[in-house]
Image (cartoon, rainbow, N blue to C red; front, side, top):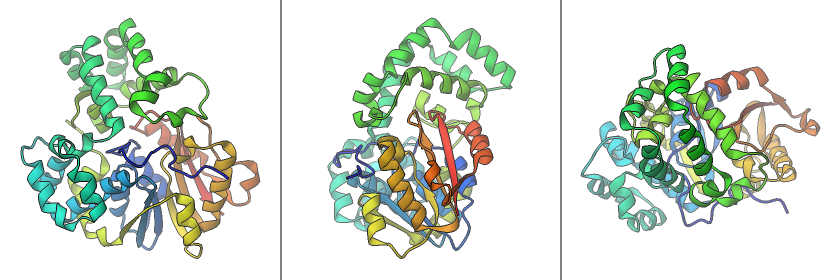
Amino acid sequence: MAAKHGGRTDGRHLSYAQCWEDADVLLEALDIRPGHVCLSIASGGDNTLAMLSRSPERLIAVDRNPAQIACLELKAAAYRLLEYDEVRELLGSLPSCRRERLYRRLRPSLSADACRYWDARPEAIAMGIGEAGKFEGYFRLFRGRVLPLIHSRERVAQLLLGGTREARETFYDAAWDTRRWRLMFHAFFSRLVMGRLGRDRGYFRYVEGGVARHLLARTRHALTALNPADNPYVQWILLGRYTTALPCALRPDRFAAIRANLDRLEWHCCALEDWLASHEGLKIDRYNLSDIFEYMSAEAYRQLLTRLARAGRPGGRMAYWNLLAERRRPAELADRLEPMVALAARLHAEDRAFFYGDFVLEEIR
């Protein structure tokens, strides 16, 4: 039997308190329109909420990890019941000494499962739920323990100022890309350390090649070809907060639309395969599949992709990311899926959540 999606989690821990895929890339790729039925991997919830800003008719979030569903549920309640700055406080995007009180205001609207999850984690509420995941803890360790051994706060601040591309490349090559930076980066972002402290160990089961080498090249791209001053993901990794940029779902111009469309959102704690089996008659227009195929063998990926394409409406789109395990439409699905290569390549070059080796966009025939 093929491994079901989400096998990377044990169901007890929050892997991701935020979404580490660029929602702006996702929204441009999917081109969600009113009337569309969309399916999204819940993950940290942010990209699912960003999809609501495009007013789909129905948005279905699926994740087999109940901790990820609890995360999405709490964020949805915050968008429904809190004001904009209060949402940012709860998530940790703004300083706050009242996060426990904000949570207590939301608690009556949460399910019993979500209450149990967050009641047991007052420290996560206190520091801001955007820091509550294993992956966020990994970055917290990096900026708190590793980065100060490499660069001063002043140098980090200078990097985040951005500037022209020429200025960014000059600064990176002359001041940032030191021998110590490369050595400590290779150590901390190695397959072994990341598997123990950052992502779940099963993530690398189907990955070949050097992980740290790939990530270092992508980091250089993010700090030179892209502008750190416009990159909320880089800012959070290096500072634990946003300074001059916000991810899509947290921008003030998206708040009202997300709140207005919350009744179109539903979530299900189950494997994606199980959800598909129980909704065989429903046709999907748009899929946000995060990076779930990274955790699967090539055969399991082919089987699930076939089922997703069968459940999709002609003209629909599915978007997903690959880190190092290559996953894209196999030849036998050429009659069902058409790769949108040019658009995907352009969006991958612009992707501010820069870790991934590939962004894949495919249209359903």
